[in-house]
Amino acid sequence: MQVKFGFFKDVVLGFGLYNVDDFREAKILQWKVKVGDNIKEGDPLCEIETEKVTTDLEAYVAGKIISLDYEEGEPWNNGGVENTPVGELVIPALGVIEVEGDAAPGTEPETESESSPQDESPQGGAKGPAQELTSVRVTPLAREAAKELGVAIEDVLASLPTDVEELTAEHIKQFSEKTAIPGPESHQGIQAVPAARKLAKELGIDISQVKPAEGSMVCVRDVEAFAKQKSGKPEAPQDGLGAFESITELGMQSATARHMQEAWNRPHASPAVDFNPKPLFKLREELKEEFKLRHGLTLRVDHFFVAACAHLLAKPELRILNAYWHEEDGNAEIRLYNHANVGIAVGVSPEKTKTGFSGLVTPSVKRAETLHFVEIVRESERLIAAALEMKLKLQDLANLTFIVNNTGTPVEWEGKRFLGDEYPDPIIAPKTAAILAFGAPREAGYDSAKKLMNVKLRFDHRVVNGHEPKLFLRALQDLIENPQKILVLR
Image 1 (tube, one colour):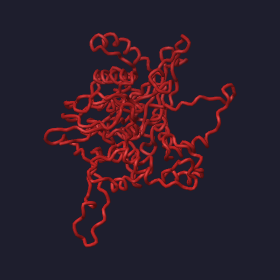
Image 2 (cartoon, rainbow, N blue to C red):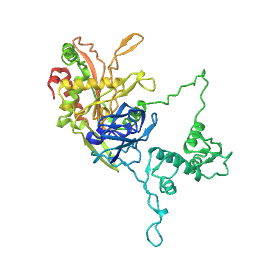
Image 3 (cartoon, rainbow, N blue to C red):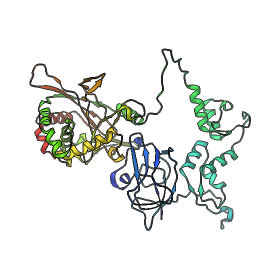
Image 4 (cartoon, rainbow, N blue to C red):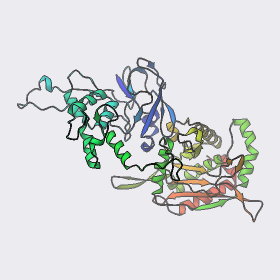
């Protein structure tokens, strides 16, 4: 049996759906197999790059590689049309594996059929040879070409000889060239596909002014590029006051921008309380060396906040903070999570991002309310280390339910070290109802035995009202100011 591959084992087989908005496009960086290779379940197939992570795609079945449908460096667009068993998230297949016996759970046969439209015989009898139903595999590149050239796949299938088994991008291109009709604005033999001509008309563009990027055929992308160039403002001279440099390779910043825009449109509130962090700092100093010796782990202030928040989110009276507002087809509901997957906001250095400036990722400690303190520290340290090196896996970012953000992390400038933000102002992540942030400690002024740390809880007011955030902050304050309690929580 042949099965398609191109989605993630953890996503398909029970881990849950990755947020589709975080995974609109990936890029194939490197194939680690070739056609004809025999593979085992769990073998790495290729390395892919998304807006958030660079990771290996692993085989979810054992078998033999029959085809690889993407080239290295080629974008792998998601939200496609192939039927893959991933619920609401559909991902075009990357290739085909030949397996013995039945396919693994959650997979489907490789062959994707597109039936060409056929007219029935006037007498209702059997179809002639030219009317026989064809079953043709449509490659992802063919779909991309059809979309680009404004060609209906059904029309191409109807024009194919009966012995064709696979529809390729070349078939689409040939069909487009045959059916393109030069209009009165055609010049020097240049033609335009119907979809490009239609778009040009809608945008008020004289298509005779549009030059094709390749060949002699004006495509949709040529019209779009012309429109963008036409509407763009000329750049100021390099020595002018209005000169600028464009950053077009956004990488993870693209996903961050979507999330922030979505979050900012929610009705939210953000109460804050000043904690005294001195007892926490004292306990951490007492334990950090032994912690390193016994467990080989760095003990951070963040770990205490993650453990305390996970404990409180599991309380029945505070579960509403571990939820999100869901709307679909005009109906709204509040969805309460069964587990606290507590995210840790990690800043990524400029050297690791595409923009050349800092980045942000938020991996989460899964089912944190079920873990002992040492387990939380161990998993947090794994996630932080992977995030700093941009080596997170997709499942590390999936199913986030709540975030803890340390905005007080020190920064350095020209050899000097400064405290971070003293008054945090976080933004809620998609599919969550709240985020907690704590700032850098500051002097109390009136009491030298105390320090003050501003702790803010921003929440989605569609989901949560004022009582639970107030209770949460005060309960958290009790734990942070008596941190020995956190060591025995579960």
